Every structure is written in structure tokens, then in C-alpha cells.
Image (cartoon, rainbow, N blue to C red; front, side, top):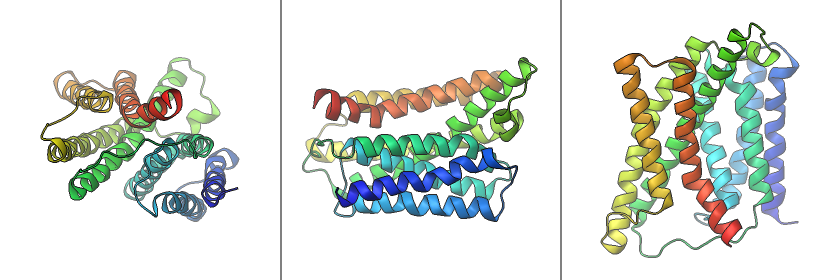
Length: 266
């Protein structure tokens, strides 16, 4: 068993206590919450460090761990700054555990090489902004999922154990909006640096491949959602579903394309 596989399994296990905590007790943003979040952060950071210690890993497993790490880092920061964001833990940590499990399964899938000749600085900036956007939009999408679940419980007049753990519709809606605003800015910068990197490589602005088109599609959906909030006060489940659609497009743009090229096509 390789070191990377052992560390990856350990990272998945490090996420499980934080995933189970909300369902085991009624707590808050207390010492135990931060302790288990720190354990998860160390586990995921260890997996990322081992996988990317020798350079950018272009495979599906590495892509999934990188996106999981971005999501966890964003959630930790937002939880520190927002009094209610920690309530997303009941959805966030199970989702990150699922991503980690998928990353572990596909850890050794052969990766396609990076394109040669791209300027290192532009490529690095593109990766940083893209991961930042993915992390912020992960939090936004999970907040949107919480809004949908809360609305469903409210309309059905049948609150569930899960709905009792999540933040309110109003708090989820506000958090989702902030994440979409910051995510749109990061995604725009990621696309811009990606275009600059591509232009420096072969003199063309973009290749207009699936990754580029899907990322632009996600940005258009986010812009439409934010514009809808201003023009007609779009809120609640309708806005949340658009936020999740944007996140789906961004997921298809990066891990999704990796799955097709590295697993299905080979």
C-alpha cells in the first residue's frame, strides 16, 4: 500500500468525527467543534501535501482532494467570521467525506500531463483563484441546500432532525449571497488568469474546451442570480437551486472533466 493511499484513507477518517458530531449532540461553535474541525483540517492538509509535494498533480484523485481542501478551508474561515455558518457542518462534513472517499478510490488513476510552456506565475494564479472560487461556492451551495431543506420542512409542517441542525432560511440565504458574490469575483479572476496563461502558451485567448465553457456557464448563472436578487428580490428555494446549479457546472468543469478524461476515456 502506497504512502499516498495510506494518507488519503487517514484524511477520510479524520473527517468522520466532525461529520458525526452534529448528529450525536446539540452543541455549538464551541471547543469540541473547533477541535474536530482542526483534526479534519490536518488530515486533509496532509493528503494534499503528500499528493502535491512534488508539484501539481493533474489526476482525478488529486483534483478531488484539492477541491475538498478548498471547501474545508473556506468553511473554517466562514465559520470563524459568521455566527451561524457552523450550522452547515451537518451537511458540509458528510459531503467532504464523500469527496475524500471518491478521491481515495481514484487516487491512482493515470493523469493526463499538463500542457507544456504555460507561464508558471499565471498558472499558479489561475490555480489559486480557481480553488478559492470552488471553496467559496462549495459553502454557498451547501447553504443553498440547507435553505431548500428548511423550506421543504416548513411547507410540509414536519420538521426533521436534520432541519433542526441547520441554520434558518434567512441566515442561509444571506450566507449564500455573500459566498456567491465572493465566489463570482474569484471565478472571474480565475478565468482571467487562465486566459492569460493560455495566451502566453500558444497565442490564443482560450481553447474553449468543456472546462472553459462550463466555468463561464457557472459565472453566468451566478451573475443572473445576483442580478435577480437586485431586480425582483429573488430569495429562498428558487435562488438556492440556481446557486446549486452554478456549483454543479463548476464541479463538471473541473472534477467532472477529469473523470471523463482520466476514467471514462483513459
